[in-house]
Length: 286
Length: 220
Image 1 (cartoon, rainbow over the protein chains, first blue to last red):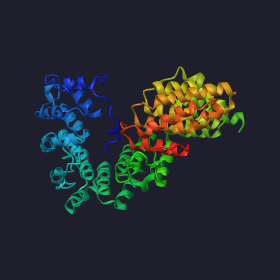
Image 2 (image 1 turned 30 degrees about the vertical axis):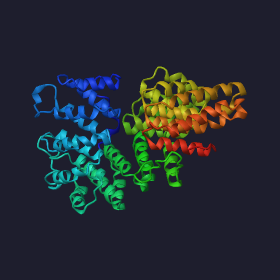
Image 3 (image 1 turned 180 degrees about the horizontal axis):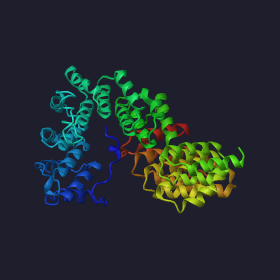
Image 4 (image 1 turned 90 degrees about the vertical axis):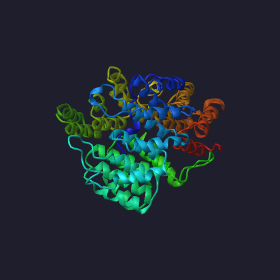
Protein backbone atom coordinates (compact mmCIF):
# COMPACT_ATOMS: atom_id res chain seq x y z
CA UNK A 1 0.00 0.00 0.00
CA UNK A 2 1.24 3.46 -0.76
CA UNK A 3 2.48 4.76 2.56
CA UNK A 4 0.51 7.62 3.98
CA UNK A 5 -2.66 6.71 2.08
CA UNK A 6 -4.35 6.43 5.45
CA UNK A 7 -3.88 10.08 6.28
CA UNK A 8 -4.21 11.91 3.01
CA UNK A 9 -4.66 15.62 3.52
CA UNK A 10 -8.05 17.14 2.98
CA UNK A 11 -8.20 18.22 -0.66
CA UNK A 12 -9.30 21.64 -1.79
CA UNK A 13 -10.36 24.30 0.63
CA UNK A 14 -11.14 21.79 3.36
CA UNK A 15 -13.93 23.76 5.01
CA UNK A 16 -16.32 21.81 7.21
CA UNK A 17 -19.58 21.25 5.34
CA UNK A 18 -22.82 19.35 5.91
CA UNK A 19 -23.92 16.28 4.00
CA UNK A 20 -26.59 18.39 2.34
CA UNK A 21 -23.95 20.84 1.17
CA UNK A 22 -21.74 18.02 -0.14
CA UNK A 23 -24.68 16.64 -2.12
CA UNK A 24 -25.30 20.11 -3.54
CA UNK A 25 -21.68 20.63 -4.56
CA UNK A 26 -21.30 17.23 -6.21
CA UNK A 27 -24.01 18.37 -8.67
CA UNK A 28 -22.04 21.47 -9.74
CA UNK A 29 -20.85 20.02 -13.04
CA UNK A 30 -19.27 23.30 -14.11
CA UNK A 31 -17.26 23.64 -10.88
CA UNK A 32 -14.88 20.65 -10.78
CA UNK A 33 -13.06 21.86 -7.67
CA UNK A 34 -16.34 21.96 -5.70
CA UNK A 35 -17.21 18.50 -7.02
CA UNK A 36 -13.75 17.23 -6.18
CA UNK A 37 -14.08 18.21 -2.54
CA UNK A 38 -17.69 17.00 -2.32
CA UNK A 39 -16.78 13.57 -3.70
CA UNK A 40 -13.97 13.26 -1.19
CA UNK A 41 -16.28 14.41 1.61
CA UNK A 42 -18.97 11.84 0.81
CA UNK A 43 -16.43 9.02 0.95
CA UNK A 44 -14.57 10.29 3.99
CA UNK A 45 -17.80 10.63 5.96
CA UNK A 46 -19.23 7.39 4.62
CA UNK A 47 -22.44 9.06 3.54
CA UNK A 48 -25.42 6.73 3.62
CA UNK A 49 -27.72 9.24 1.93
CA UNK A 50 -29.71 7.48 -0.82
CA UNK A 51 -28.58 10.08 -3.37
CA UNK A 52 -24.87 9.72 -2.61
CA UNK A 53 -24.21 6.63 -4.76
CA UNK A 54 -26.19 7.80 -7.84
CA UNK A 55 -24.52 11.22 -7.71
CA UNK A 56 -21.07 9.70 -7.38
CA UNK A 57 -21.87 7.41 -10.34
CA UNK A 58 -22.74 10.57 -12.31
CA UNK A 59 -19.47 12.19 -11.25
CA UNK A 60 -17.56 9.06 -12.23
CA UNK A 61 -19.03 9.26 -15.73
CA UNK A 62 -18.00 12.89 -15.97
CA UNK A 63 -14.54 12.22 -17.34
CA UNK A 64 -12.79 12.99 -20.54
CA UNK A 65 -9.51 12.13 -22.22
CA UNK A 66 -6.50 13.62 -20.59
CA UNK A 67 -5.51 17.00 -21.84
CA UNK A 68 -2.64 18.42 -19.83
CA UNK A 69 -3.25 21.87 -21.34
CA UNK A 70 -6.88 22.09 -20.24
CA UNK A 71 -6.26 23.65 -16.86
CA UNK A 72 -8.59 21.96 -14.41
CA UNK A 73 -8.17 18.26 -14.71
CA UNK A 74 -11.66 16.80 -14.85
CA UNK A 75 -10.59 13.23 -14.31
CA UNK A 76 -9.68 14.30 -10.80
CA UNK A 77 -13.41 14.44 -10.01
CA UNK A 78 -13.93 10.95 -11.44
CA UNK A 79 -10.97 9.63 -9.44
CA UNK A 80 -12.34 10.97 -6.19
CA UNK A 81 -15.79 9.65 -7.06
CA UNK A 82 -14.36 6.17 -7.62
CA UNK A 83 -12.44 6.31 -4.35
CA UNK A 84 -15.54 7.50 -2.50
CA UNK A 85 -17.70 4.72 -3.94
CA UNK A 86 -15.22 2.23 -2.54
CA UNK A 87 -15.86 3.57 0.94
CA UNK A 88 -19.65 3.46 0.86
CA UNK A 89 -20.05 -0.29 1.28
CA UNK A 90 -23.08 -2.32 0.24
CA UNK A 91 -25.15 0.51 -1.35
CA UNK A 92 -22.20 1.30 -3.64
CA UNK A 93 -22.23 -2.20 -5.11
CA UNK A 94 -24.76 -0.79 -7.57
CA UNK A 95 -21.83 1.15 -9.05
CA UNK A 96 -19.66 -1.91 -9.69
CA UNK A 97 -20.48 -1.96 -13.46
CA UNK A 98 -19.38 1.70 -13.71
CA UNK A 99 -16.17 0.90 -11.85
CA UNK A 100 -15.51 -2.09 -14.10
CA UNK A 101 -15.85 0.21 -17.11
CA UNK A 102 -13.49 2.69 -15.44
CA UNK A 103 -10.95 -0.09 -15.00
CA UNK A 104 -10.70 -0.15 -18.81
CA UNK A 105 -10.09 3.61 -19.12
CA UNK A 106 -6.94 4.89 -20.82
CA UNK A 107 -6.16 7.07 -17.81
CA UNK A 108 -3.76 5.28 -15.47
CA UNK A 109 -4.94 7.23 -12.43
CA UNK A 110 -8.56 6.33 -13.10
CA UNK A 111 -7.73 2.66 -13.46
CA UNK A 112 -5.84 2.86 -10.19
CA UNK A 113 -8.75 4.50 -8.36
CA UNK A 114 -11.22 2.00 -9.84
CA UNK A 115 -9.05 -0.93 -8.75
CA UNK A 116 -8.92 0.40 -5.20
CA UNK A 117 -12.68 0.85 -5.11
CA UNK A 118 -13.40 -2.59 -6.59
CA UNK A 119 -11.13 -4.10 -3.95
CA UNK A 120 -12.85 -2.14 -1.19
CA UNK A 121 -16.23 -3.35 -2.45
CA UNK A 122 -14.88 -6.91 -2.75
CA UNK A 123 -16.31 -7.09 -6.26
CA UNK A 124 -15.90 -10.69 -7.38
CA UNK A 125 -16.78 -9.63 -10.93
CA UNK A 126 -13.57 -7.61 -10.99
CA UNK A 127 -11.26 -10.57 -10.44
CA UNK A 128 -11.03 -11.56 -14.08
CA UNK A 129 -10.39 -8.05 -15.49
CA UNK A 130 -7.88 -7.35 -12.71
CA UNK A 131 -6.12 -10.63 -13.42
CA UNK A 132 -6.09 -9.90 -17.16
CA UNK A 133 -4.41 -6.51 -16.62
CA UNK A 134 -1.59 -8.17 -14.68
CA UNK A 135 -1.28 -11.30 -16.80
CA UNK A 136 1.57 -9.97 -18.97
CA UNK A 137 3.70 -10.02 -15.82
CA UNK A 138 6.45 -7.78 -14.41
CA UNK A 139 8.16 -7.47 -17.81
CA UNK A 140 5.16 -5.86 -19.53
CA UNK A 141 2.42 -4.77 -17.11
CA UNK A 142 5.12 -4.10 -14.54
CA UNK A 143 7.53 -2.29 -16.88
CA UNK A 144 8.19 1.39 -16.37
CA UNK A 145 6.55 3.82 -18.79
CA UNK A 146 9.12 5.88 -20.68
CA UNK A 147 9.52 9.35 -19.24
CA UNK A 148 7.50 8.80 -16.06
CA UNK A 149 8.00 6.84 -12.84
CA UNK A 150 4.72 5.02 -13.54
CA UNK A 151 4.53 1.41 -14.57
CA UNK A 152 2.44 0.35 -17.56
CA UNK A 153 -0.35 -0.70 -15.19
CA UNK A 154 -1.14 0.51 -11.66
CA UNK A 155 0.23 -2.80 -10.40
CA UNK A 156 0.16 -1.99 -6.72
CA UNK A 157 -3.56 -1.19 -6.79
CA UNK A 158 -4.39 -4.16 -9.01
CA UNK A 159 -2.50 -6.59 -6.75
CA UNK A 160 -4.01 -5.17 -3.61
CA UNK A 161 -7.51 -5.42 -5.04
CA UNK A 162 -7.05 -9.09 -5.91
CA UNK A 163 -5.90 -9.80 -2.37
CA UNK A 164 -8.78 -7.87 -0.88
CA UNK A 165 -11.48 -9.50 -3.00
CA UNK A 166 -10.23 -12.86 -1.86
CA UNK A 167 -10.75 -15.26 -4.76
CA UNK A 168 -7.86 -17.70 -4.27
CA UNK A 169 -8.06 -19.57 -7.55
CA UNK A 170 -4.86 -21.04 -9.02
CA UNK A 171 -5.15 -18.79 -12.10
CA UNK A 172 -5.20 -15.73 -9.85
CA UNK A 173 -2.30 -16.86 -7.69
CA UNK A 174 -0.26 -17.71 -10.79
CA UNK A 175 -0.60 -14.15 -12.08
CA UNK A 176 0.31 -12.55 -8.76
CA UNK A 177 3.33 -14.70 -7.91
CA UNK A 178 5.79 -13.34 -10.51
CA UNK A 179 5.41 -9.88 -8.95
CA UNK A 180 7.05 -10.98 -5.68
CA UNK A 181 10.38 -10.58 -7.48
CA UNK A 182 9.54 -7.25 -9.16
CA UNK A 183 12.43 -4.81 -9.03
CA UNK A 184 10.44 -2.33 -6.97
CA UNK A 185 10.07 -3.22 -3.29
CA UNK A 186 6.60 -1.63 -3.07
CA UNK A 187 5.33 -3.96 -5.80
CA UNK A 188 6.93 -6.93 -4.07
CA UNK A 189 5.22 -5.86 -0.87
CA UNK A 190 1.82 -5.56 -2.56
CA UNK A 191 2.20 -8.99 -4.17
CA UNK A 192 3.21 -10.65 -0.89
CA UNK A 193 0.30 -8.96 0.85
CA UNK A 194 -2.18 -10.28 -1.72
CA UNK A 195 -0.73 -13.79 -1.58
CA UNK A 196 -0.76 -13.75 2.21
CA UNK A 197 -4.40 -12.71 2.19
CA UNK A 198 -5.30 -15.35 -0.38
CA UNK A 199 -3.28 -18.32 0.92
CA UNK A 200 -2.26 -17.51 4.52
CA UNK A 201 1.07 -19.19 3.72
CA UNK A 202 3.78 -18.04 6.16
CA UNK A 203 6.38 -17.62 3.39
CA UNK A 204 4.59 -14.50 2.13
CA UNK A 205 4.31 -13.09 5.65
CA UNK A 206 8.01 -13.77 6.17
CA UNK A 207 8.89 -11.78 3.05
CA UNK A 208 6.84 -8.84 4.29
CA UNK A 209 8.55 -9.05 7.68
CA UNK A 210 11.90 -8.98 5.88
CA UNK A 211 10.83 -5.75 4.13
CA UNK A 212 10.38 -4.14 7.58
CA UNK A 213 14.19 -4.06 7.65
CA UNK A 214 14.53 -2.34 4.28
CA UNK A 215 16.90 0.59 4.34
CA UNK A 216 14.34 2.99 2.87
CA UNK A 217 11.70 4.33 5.22
CA UNK A 218 8.93 4.40 2.60
CA UNK A 219 9.41 0.68 1.99
CA UNK A 220 9.27 -0.08 5.71
CA UNK A 221 6.10 2.00 5.94
CA UNK A 222 4.48 0.12 3.05
CA UNK A 223 5.37 -3.27 4.57
CA UNK A 224 3.82 -2.13 7.87
CA UNK A 225 0.57 -1.21 6.13
CA UNK A 226 0.57 -4.46 4.15
CA UNK A 227 1.12 -6.65 7.22
CA UNK A 228 -1.68 -4.74 8.92
CA UNK A 229 -4.03 -5.21 5.96
CA UNK A 230 -3.30 -8.95 5.96
CA UNK A 231 -3.63 -9.13 9.76
CA UNK A 232 -0.52 -11.29 10.06
CA UNK A 233 -0.28 -11.91 13.83
CA UNK A 234 3.18 -13.46 13.62
CA UNK A 235 4.49 -9.99 12.73
CA UNK A 236 3.64 -8.48 16.13
CA UNK A 237 7.18 -8.25 17.51
CA UNK A 238 8.84 -7.23 14.21
CA UNK A 239 6.24 -4.48 13.75
CA UNK A 240 6.91 -3.16 17.26
CA UNK A 241 10.66 -3.11 16.53
CA UNK A 242 10.46 -1.45 13.07
CA UNK A 243 12.20 1.88 12.61
CA UNK A 244 9.15 3.94 11.63
CA UNK A 245 6.61 6.28 13.18
CA UNK A 246 4.45 4.95 15.99
CA UNK A 247 1.38 6.24 14.11
CA UNK A 248 1.96 3.74 11.32
CA UNK A 249 2.79 0.90 13.68
CA UNK A 250 -0.49 1.56 15.48
CA UNK A 251 -2.42 1.38 12.19
CA UNK A 252 -0.68 -1.91 11.34
CA UNK A 253 -1.38 -3.36 14.78
CA UNK A 254 -5.01 -2.33 14.52
CA UNK A 255 -5.08 -4.53 11.42
CA UNK A 256 -3.67 -7.44 13.43
CA UNK A 257 -6.43 -7.01 16.00
CA UNK A 258 -9.22 -6.62 13.46
CA UNK A 259 -8.08 -9.28 11.02
CA UNK A 260 -10.96 -11.07 9.30
CA UNK A 261 -12.41 -13.89 11.31
CA UNK A 262 -11.01 -12.59 14.57
CA UNK A 263 -13.27 -9.60 14.78
CA UNK A 264 -15.42 -9.67 17.84
CA UNK A 265 -18.61 -8.33 16.25
CA UNK A 266 -20.72 -8.97 19.33
CA UNK A 267 -20.92 -6.15 21.83
CA UNK A 268 -20.19 -8.25 24.90
CA UNK A 269 -16.98 -9.69 23.53
CA UNK A 270 -13.83 -9.56 25.60
CA UNK A 271 -10.49 -9.89 23.80
CA UNK A 272 -8.68 -13.23 23.98
CA UNK A 273 -5.11 -13.55 25.25
CA UNK A 274 -3.50 -13.24 21.82
CA UNK A 275 -5.47 -10.06 21.14
CA UNK A 276 -4.56 -8.63 24.54
CA UNK A 277 -0.90 -9.18 23.62
CA UNK A 278 -1.38 -6.95 20.55
CA UNK A 279 -3.30 -4.33 22.55
CA UNK A 280 -0.49 -4.23 25.14
CA UNK A 281 2.01 -3.43 22.38
CA UNK A 282 -0.32 -0.74 21.04
CA UNK A 283 -0.67 0.83 24.50
CA UNK A 284 3.10 1.12 24.74
CA UNK A 285 3.27 2.99 21.42
CA UNK A 286 0.77 5.73 22.32
CA UNK B 1 28.17 11.04 35.81
CA UNK B 2 29.60 14.38 36.91
CA UNK B 3 29.04 17.81 35.45
CA UNK B 4 32.08 18.16 33.17
CA UNK B 5 31.10 14.89 31.48
CA UNK B 6 27.55 16.16 30.86
CA UNK B 7 28.94 19.42 29.51
CA UNK B 8 31.09 17.46 27.08
CA UNK B 9 28.03 15.57 25.88
CA UNK B 10 26.09 18.83 25.47
CA UNK B 11 28.95 20.19 23.41
CA UNK B 12 28.77 17.05 21.30
CA UNK B 13 25.14 17.84 20.46
CA UNK B 14 25.91 21.48 19.72
CA UNK B 15 28.80 20.55 17.43
CA UNK B 16 26.90 17.86 15.50
CA UNK B 17 26.91 18.81 11.81
CA UNK B 18 24.83 16.01 10.28
CA UNK B 19 21.49 14.33 10.98
CA UNK B 20 23.17 11.10 12.01
CA UNK B 21 25.75 12.93 14.10
CA UNK B 22 22.96 14.78 15.91
CA UNK B 23 21.11 11.53 16.51
CA UNK B 24 24.15 9.81 18.01
CA UNK B 25 25.13 12.80 20.14
CA UNK B 26 21.56 13.17 21.41
CA UNK B 27 21.38 9.48 22.27
CA UNK B 28 24.62 9.79 24.25
CA UNK B 29 23.36 12.86 26.10
CA UNK B 30 19.97 11.26 26.75
CA UNK B 31 21.64 8.17 28.20
CA UNK B 32 23.24 10.33 30.88
CA UNK B 33 19.76 11.04 32.33
CA UNK B 34 21.42 14.00 34.06
CA UNK B 35 19.24 17.01 34.98
CA UNK B 36 21.83 19.33 33.39
CA UNK B 37 21.10 17.68 30.06
CA UNK B 38 17.48 18.87 30.06
CA UNK B 39 17.84 22.33 28.42
CA UNK B 40 19.89 20.90 25.57
CA UNK B 41 17.48 17.98 25.09
CA UNK B 42 14.53 20.38 24.96
CA UNK B 43 16.42 22.38 22.35
CA UNK B 44 16.82 19.25 20.22
CA UNK B 45 13.01 18.90 20.14
CA UNK B 46 12.97 21.97 17.91
CA UNK B 47 15.54 20.74 15.37
CA UNK B 48 13.09 18.93 13.06
CA UNK B 49 15.05 15.69 13.30
CA UNK B 50 12.53 12.99 14.31
CA UNK B 51 15.14 10.39 15.27
CA UNK B 52 16.97 12.82 17.53
CA UNK B 53 13.66 14.08 18.95
CA UNK B 54 12.67 10.54 19.94
CA UNK B 55 16.00 10.14 21.71
CA UNK B 56 15.59 13.53 23.41
CA UNK B 57 12.07 12.62 24.63
CA UNK B 58 13.41 9.36 26.05
CA UNK B 59 16.20 11.30 27.77
CA UNK B 60 13.78 13.84 29.26
CA UNK B 61 11.54 11.04 30.55
CA UNK B 62 14.59 9.36 32.08
CA UNK B 63 15.51 12.62 33.85
CA UNK B 64 11.92 12.83 35.05
CA UNK B 65 10.66 15.52 37.41
CA UNK B 66 13.82 17.69 37.37
CA UNK B 67 13.22 18.21 33.62
CA UNK B 68 9.63 19.45 33.95
CA UNK B 69 10.32 23.10 34.76
CA UNK B 70 12.82 23.32 31.94
CA UNK B 71 10.32 21.87 29.48
CA UNK B 72 7.49 24.15 30.61
CA UNK B 73 9.72 27.22 30.52
CA UNK B 74 11.19 26.56 27.12
CA UNK B 75 8.31 25.18 25.06
CA UNK B 76 6.21 28.32 24.89
CA UNK B 77 8.37 30.03 22.35
CA UNK B 78 8.85 26.87 20.33
CA UNK B 79 7.42 25.79 17.04
CA UNK B 80 4.57 23.34 16.65
CA UNK B 81 6.77 20.30 16.15
CA UNK B 82 8.76 20.99 19.30
CA UNK B 83 5.61 21.46 21.35
CA UNK B 84 4.29 18.13 20.09
CA UNK B 85 7.42 16.36 21.27
CA UNK B 86 7.29 18.22 24.59
CA UNK B 87 3.74 16.92 25.15
CA UNK B 88 5.07 13.40 24.69
CA UNK B 89 7.84 14.03 27.22
CA UNK B 90 5.44 15.52 29.77
CA UNK B 91 3.02 12.61 29.27
CA UNK B 92 5.86 10.16 29.88
CA UNK B 93 7.19 11.94 32.96
CA UNK B 94 3.76 12.08 34.61
CA UNK B 95 4.40 15.16 36.73
CA UNK B 96 1.26 17.07 37.71
CA UNK B 97 2.79 20.35 36.53
CA UNK B 98 2.21 19.07 33.00
CA UNK B 99 -1.55 18.81 33.50
CA UNK B 100 -2.49 22.05 31.79
CA UNK B 101 -0.34 21.35 28.73
CA UNK B 102 -1.83 17.86 28.42
CA UNK B 103 -5.43 19.12 28.79
CA UNK B 104 -4.78 21.71 26.16
CA UNK B 105 -3.13 19.22 23.81
CA UNK B 106 -5.92 16.62 24.00
CA UNK B 107 -8.59 19.26 23.53
CA UNK B 108 -7.04 21.44 20.86
CA UNK B 109 -3.96 20.05 19.17
CA UNK B 110 -4.33 19.44 15.43
CA UNK B 111 -2.01 16.40 15.44
CA UNK B 112 -3.62 13.05 16.33
CA UNK B 113 -0.24 11.75 17.51
CA UNK B 114 -0.05 14.61 20.01
CA UNK B 115 -3.64 14.14 21.20
CA UNK B 116 -3.13 10.41 21.67
CA UNK B 117 0.04 10.96 23.73
CA UNK B 118 -1.80 13.54 25.84
CA UNK B 119 -4.74 11.17 26.43
CA UNK B 120 -2.47 8.48 27.74
CA UNK B 121 -0.52 11.04 29.77
CA UNK B 122 -3.70 12.30 31.46
CA UNK B 123 -4.22 8.79 32.79
CA UNK B 124 -0.77 8.44 34.28
CA UNK B 125 -0.04 11.68 36.12
CA UNK B 126 1.35 10.89 39.55
CA UNK B 127 -1.47 12.47 41.55
CA UNK B 128 -0.65 10.59 44.74
CA UNK B 129 2.00 13.15 45.70
CA UNK B 130 -0.72 15.81 46.15
CA UNK B 131 -2.79 16.66 49.20
CA UNK B 132 -6.33 15.21 49.13
CA UNK B 133 -8.19 18.27 47.85
CA UNK B 134 -5.76 19.29 45.09
CA UNK B 135 -5.53 15.64 44.17
CA UNK B 136 -9.31 15.41 43.75
CA UNK B 137 -9.32 18.60 41.71
CA UNK B 138 -6.54 17.36 39.43
CA UNK B 139 -8.21 13.95 38.98
CA UNK B 140 -11.44 15.71 38.06
CA UNK B 141 -9.65 17.78 35.41
CA UNK B 142 -8.02 14.65 33.95
CA UNK B 143 -11.39 12.88 33.94
CA UNK B 144 -13.18 15.77 32.27
CA UNK B 145 -10.52 16.10 29.56
CA UNK B 146 -10.73 12.37 28.82
CA UNK B 147 -14.54 12.40 28.77
CA UNK B 148 -14.38 15.16 26.16
CA UNK B 149 -11.78 13.12 24.27
CA UNK B 150 -14.27 10.25 23.80
CA UNK B 151 -15.74 12.28 20.93
CA UNK B 152 -12.43 12.78 19.12
CA UNK B 153 -12.67 12.20 15.37
CA UNK B 154 -9.61 9.94 15.18
CA UNK B 155 -9.83 6.30 16.21
CA UNK B 156 -6.31 6.29 17.64
CA UNK B 157 -7.16 9.15 19.99
CA UNK B 158 -10.34 7.41 21.17
CA UNK B 159 -8.20 4.30 21.71
CA UNK B 160 -5.75 6.31 23.80
CA UNK B 161 -8.65 7.82 25.75
CA UNK B 162 -9.79 4.28 26.67
CA UNK B 163 -6.26 3.54 27.87
CA UNK B 164 -6.12 6.85 29.76
CA UNK B 165 -9.44 6.19 31.47
CA UNK B 166 -8.27 2.74 32.58
CA UNK B 167 -5.07 4.24 34.01
CA UNK B 168 -6.95 7.07 35.72
CA UNK B 169 -9.48 4.75 37.39
CA UNK B 170 -7.62 4.27 40.69
CA UNK B 171 -7.49 8.05 41.18
CA UNK B 172 -11.28 8.39 41.06
CA UNK B 173 -12.00 5.47 43.39
CA UNK B 174 -14.93 6.47 45.66
CA UNK B 175 -12.65 6.18 48.65
CA UNK B 176 -10.39 8.93 47.26
CA UNK B 177 -12.96 10.96 45.39
CA UNK B 178 -15.36 11.43 48.33
CA UNK B 179 -18.19 9.71 46.52
CA UNK B 180 -19.03 7.31 43.71
CA UNK B 181 -19.95 9.90 41.11
CA UNK B 182 -16.55 10.41 39.34
CA UNK B 183 -16.00 6.66 39.12
CA UNK B 184 -19.47 6.20 37.65
CA UNK B 185 -18.74 8.81 34.98
CA UNK B 186 -15.47 7.08 34.12
CA UNK B 187 -17.21 3.71 33.78
CA UNK B 188 -19.99 5.26 31.71
CA UNK B 189 -17.41 6.76 29.36
CA UNK B 190 -15.76 3.37 28.84
CA UNK B 191 -19.14 1.74 28.29
CA UNK B 192 -19.88 4.46 25.74
CA UNK B 193 -16.61 3.75 23.90
CA UNK B 194 -17.31 0.03 24.05
CA UNK B 195 -20.92 0.08 22.87
CA UNK B 196 -20.97 3.10 20.53
CA UNK B 197 -22.86 1.86 17.44
CA UNK B 198 -21.20 4.55 15.31
CA UNK B 199 -17.66 3.40 16.23
CA UNK B 200 -15.83 2.68 12.96
CA UNK B 201 -12.83 1.04 14.64
CA UNK B 202 -13.59 -2.28 16.36
CA UNK B 203 -10.22 -2.04 18.11
CA UNK B 204 -11.49 0.96 20.11
CA UNK B 205 -14.53 -0.97 21.32
CA UNK B 206 -12.32 -3.93 22.14
CA UNK B 207 -9.83 -1.84 24.11
CA UNK B 208 -12.66 -0.28 26.12
CA UNK B 209 -14.00 -3.80 26.83
CA UNK B 210 -10.58 -4.82 28.10
CA UNK B 211 -10.45 -1.76 30.36
CA UNK B 212 -13.91 -2.52 31.77
CA UNK B 213 -12.90 -6.13 32.37
CA UNK B 214 -9.73 -5.07 34.18
CA UNK B 215 -11.72 -2.62 36.29
CA UNK B 216 -14.23 -5.34 37.15
CA UNK B 217 -17.17 -3.59 35.50
CA UNK B 218 -19.92 -5.75 34.02
CA UNK B 219 -20.64 -4.89 30.42
CA UNK B 220 -22.20 -6.12 27.20
